[in-house]
Image (tube, rainbow, N blue to C red; front, side, top):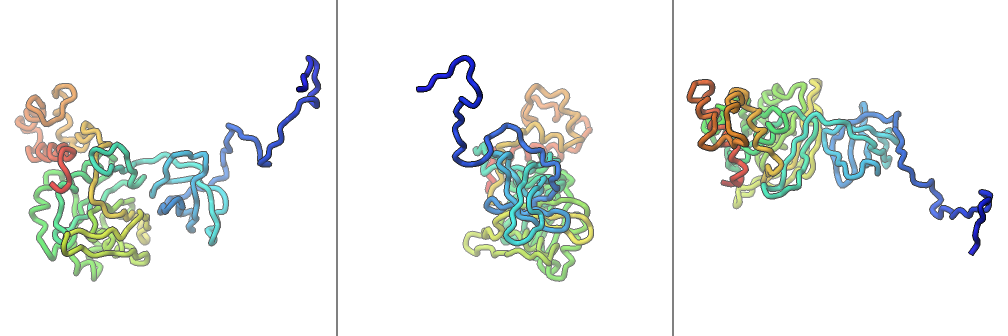
Length: 335
């Protein structure tokens, strides 16, 4: 073995060749100051479709993003081939800070959060009045998720030609949730789409709902040039088929709004929701919590909200609605 003395020359030091022929690793990462900003329209098996200016570009995550996820609605910085030509691939190097994040879990015992959509400001909860039957507990869970994410909820009731909406609307009257009622005839002639569109102007709205409620049919009426496949309700189980398999952002014509169609859900877990944050969606009740005991669940004998309501500061129906929403984590959607 060769040994080096105290006064070795640099030419005497052996350097192992880089067999791969690439540059040595470094902790210094490029700043990508020339990156262009894009909007994520859809994500499909690692391929991410972005809107950059007036063209769609297919991209993939850069290695430096690590495990950081990219979801529909994200604002991202993209480098590489941005022409949008066939068989080209760009790279997403940064995800811009999100203004809102709508999350859900598979069920209330699942700690793994799934981000449904980013940067939306409104959540349209679509439910049928019949075929399939409405599921109020699922609506409640979507409302809790919307309030937690800072989204304004919108209740869209479909198939009013099969059943009246009065009973369902009465149960949500105290929450003050805006709503639109549609039927299949109005969907055919465009009247339903016009009424819903009024609520979407200038906003980014995520559509969620149980499979088979007509969510994608409504989206197709709103954006007819980008029709998506729709399915039918199973006559035996009363459930719809999952025809929409991935979320997709679509622009509304000439008004600056966006609709994000999401796959139908059969559950909406709230494991990630801190119940103490739900009270923020009830500004008329929140001041009454000042005298609540520490870590009050707002549904126990010593809760100060009972006295607050008894003194006439808020409607008793609002307190009932709050407690019903807080109890959603204790019940399954089908209950």
